[in-house]
Length: 269
Image (tube, rainbow, N blue to C red):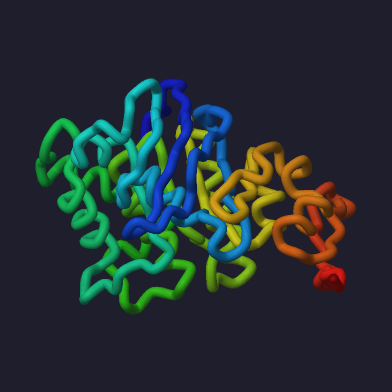
């Protein structure tokens, strides 16, 4: 897959929610440059998945979401799908599809902005995507027979097949063992390094601190911190947002370690 030309993601004054219930309001971030991996972290109901779905165009949103100067909110679903790919937390069951059939189905379900592509090009894109994520050898395996880690990699291959500029992933490491967490995060770093923007929701602060270029810490739909990992994830920010006492340290190799000591006791009135 070819490298992307330099671009940036801009989010300004963004508001979104569900059925009249606002979740994020007037949210703005510093521009995200191409080649960067951004982790969205925060407690439950902080607005992480809502922000991701707003960026993907899956829920109504007000404000500015611009990618390379293009207003994503104003684009048609087809045009937006050519630029942005979204991988949900819960991947649909395969219904008997093989891995490569699932990737081909994703190409048909979200046609490229230039229109439908021929069967030859679709198969070429699918094969390159499977090769890129390192699962070409299981292309003919049924999705329903895959391990959790393999299913996540297959989902990334589906999202990558359309060669997006912006890749959005909702908790891609949830329920994965340590090895598959490492494989997925290393893969996402490599995908970002190709010149894309990768935005990923994570619950594991240690994973976010180790792999992300930037960490956006959300709390109640607002941005508590937006900075490099060791600036965003601190003992003070963890205490303020999660309500726990924690230490943020470095191991002997310089990797971050987040040690939670316990809940912060609320003072009595």
